[in-house]
Image (cartoon, rainbow, N blue to C red; front, top):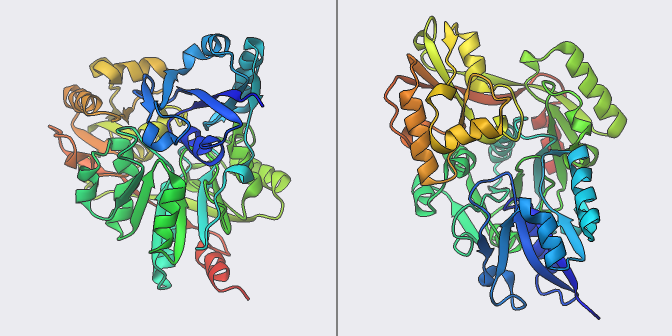
Length: 440
């Protein structure tokens, strides 16, 4: 039988996982190429032969997604597999139309088809959009489990922005491990908070290999999701976060709506800053899409150490990059801290932006007076540092999950805006998770 010539659309994460679990060593398909979007510096390299398997001794090329139509026609592609997340439903169907018009079939793989099974219980933390508060929820769940005496290991959604072969299986237990694996800011934002609370975290490219390693040392595995993607492992408990600051997104974004429908528990985060009417709208959508789910009301409690350095000062708000870029959030913890503690003005960093930071503002023109902490490469980290240091302000507030001051040299007083998930309704996470751990 003729092999079906296949192209996988992705963003250095879900695409590689779909390949690994469905197409690697599968004689019925020939994966001709990947395309890449969302993340910079992913295109124009290869998915290496060490990971691609025996059918691909030369690896598989990765192209920029803007070459999609050209690739379908030139390479006589039969199937295009859509494999990335956090995009509107309408966007997905526009891509489907482009693929069909070019002559190929458009494929979205089912959740069950790509979830690996584990002999260790798994709790998955997912969301309907980037920036809902997954990281804070994951930390909260890990603390609850740890307090019960369980050995908890987190597995993070992939962020392989370097040498893919070397990143096949990554284990992070100490700060030295971050340097060992040459982590970007985006990676450190996800791994460092786990290390701070004594939780080992794994990530990488080959999630079957990762899962088997983790099963050897964990009593419970916590899946720390990325974007609004589905879990890579079949969860025993599926927790999904929704955001009342973006009401309606929970039913209009892919594949976040699927996460909503699969959830056992839905957490509505950041309610303390939300319009009550929007909270009501979100709850109605939850009840309509998933009436059996338990709903938890929650806040993201922001704390800072030196409010006197904010009051009456000109401040620069530095926020988590993905949250305010493709996540579309208009603000984050830094902006909220600036408002709450009486900053005289939040300075617009755009006039001071350089290099790829300036390009980010051009790509996402809706970003207002805040600076996304972009750091996908050493060059971009340097440009982020230069942008911060050139900005005319009195204080820098960082709303990123990591201590940015450890990575770049900032020439102004810097304050971290820390945030933790706090439930405000009953039953809370602790009681629901305890019921899960000790059923009956």
